[in-house]
Length: 467
Ligand SMILES: [Zn+2]
Image (cartoon, rainbow, N blue to C red):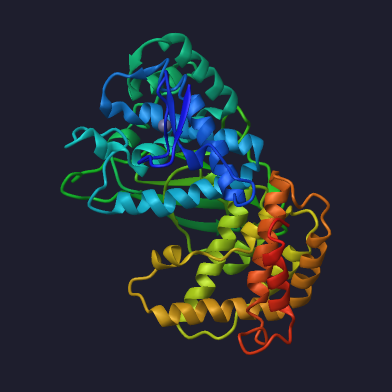
């Protein structure tokens, strides 16, 4: 009961009697399909299959509840891809997509809540906000309750509502009631729109051995939303010492969910959290796993960001800190700085040589912020300055890390499983491409000559694209 269509104005549809797929999202030609094609097929087939419960057996009371099925089912397909692939990388990709598609929607004239109050046409509802931000709302519920608690809530939801047409309120109630939580403030996430900004300020009092962390939320005010109320924001956090070791947090200072992960509940516009008995100023790892769809404004010292990039146990934040560092350095280069900091180049060499970091994650750590992401940090755009900064940055990395990059490339080329369709092979192929992209910035591997031999490596790689 599946039909595949070449000309279909969408991805797929979960109709109970006849599933409709865009053919590129259900069939792959092994001679031309890329790794990304295989992964899209896996996730879209999973998504439509999961709709059997979240959408079909339990369906929507009215169209304004669209995120009840789409947000929840996107969340489920993201979790499926994380289980069968690489959890950390999956989260990184999902957040990148949210930021580039949904954050811009939430900041523009089409901003709307995850559960809208009105619409001109139901077709207008199939948005990044309903789908992807909707999935983030479900994920925040999982962070507040922990995986065990969330599973209990999902079982409760299906037991109560199988065969019925219900609302996002019913879902939130099903999750909260079995966990003894009050979601009344949390549900504002369904009503208010806009990406909240979170300003992070911290101070250390050495005589009292106290670390004070202040978080301030601000929510865009518009004509449609003149007096926004504070969100209930879950902040997954850890504190690290200067060596990057996790500091144990006592239960009277933070809450723990059923996964025993530490969570701060930011419920007011501004709150200060106090951590006692700190012998030195700790380094905070905030919003681990991107625990809320917010924009974090944090002027941390570069050394602290480098410790987090190397040592944090949360993979999402390691890569996030790397991106923040690159953004900062690229901005400095655009404003006339000439050198990439030596401390960063030293860390990059260590990352390239680190055998404990798997290939896919290493590629993510060695990927610079996209132009779109850099543009979001700029007030005015100077295209040539941006281009020069990117080129200068990559050339300095290539020159400083040349021997590590070459050694890594040769090492990866010996991998026995290179032609497989597997998470490991996806990661190796991706990292090889990254390494070559950086090496081709070596000054002597330009169009006029190839004294470094990098262009020859790229040509060979191209003709052996399967490996
Ligand atoms: Zn769907």
